[in-house]
Length: 338
Ligand SMILES: CCCCC/C=C\CCC/C=C/CC(=O)SCCNC(=O)CCNC(=O)[C@H](O)C(C)(C)COP(=O)(O)OP(=O)(O)OC[C@H]1O[C@@H](n2cnc3c(N)ncnc32)[C@H](O)[C@@H]1OP(=O)(O)O
Image (cartoon, rainbow, N blue to C red):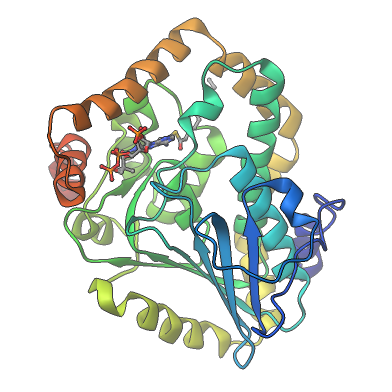
């Protein structure tokens, strides 16, 4: 079974694998730039603010801390997804790496989900390439043989929530301004079946039904009560809590944990692996419709309008606007009763 997981992970993006560079003199740190070309060049200075995926490897424990670092909101663009795929391959192939903690280097945001602009006003070839990259990240993360903990240090809508759902355990910072959930329907789009399956496997059918249909975004407390996340901690303790939790997962022999994980996730993974091309075709057909494009444009504009109503838009104020707009969910009480 572990071999199945490994096979799912290896062999993808082979041309890109192995192009990561390690920072000399700062062992165990991998950094990638959002520009594909710089990946191919050995680099010696990595403190540039344009670093989009940062990995800090603790060689003593074999735990990699992976931080998404694309301000302002860590939206999952095609270049970011491509880089992330390379990093994940590299970590899977590193025999010393046993665990992965996924978090964000951007204050208050874990990830805003898929980059809206990769789904708007583009040729079909772009949609197709973009969606393949989205699939790839899900396959790598959901099928990862590493113990994987999400340290959710900010809002995490849609594709951001999916990233967190791929982990084995989710710890969220207990800040009432943060929200998490699969809100696709609110944008006039539809979460594909494998987003749905990932949520379903985590929270069960009734919560999935209500959450997906209504595009609900939840506060940390709500998310905890629905088992969308496993634990809440004060923001300042998030990384130490994730590290401590990882210790618990690494006490289990890797092969036993990996085979168990594979047993549980294999059929869900195969659901997509067996029909990737059809899923890409569906996405392209769906996203290129005029009505869907209009919905996305309207939504993207509404994000910008929220800001225009407030002058000057302090970051704490903006956070509150987003929370009020998307998070307070009257249907939450329905779930509580169900
Ligand atoms: C029948 C078969 C069907 C098959 C269908 C198949 C597939 C279709 C489904 C595709 C799946 C999509 C999943 C997704 O992930 S869609 C993306 C959903 N994301 C969101 O809804 C999040 C939107 N963003 C927010 O809610 C907020 O930005 C925030 C993350 C809470 C942060 O708030 P705040 O700190 O206040 O920041 P701003 O709102 O001011 O944003 C700053 C800046 O960033 C831009 N931006 C925000 N989100 C995105 C994004 N996802 N992509 C690109 N850009 C984003 C925002 O517009 C601001 O830009 P400006 O500074 O230029 O104004």
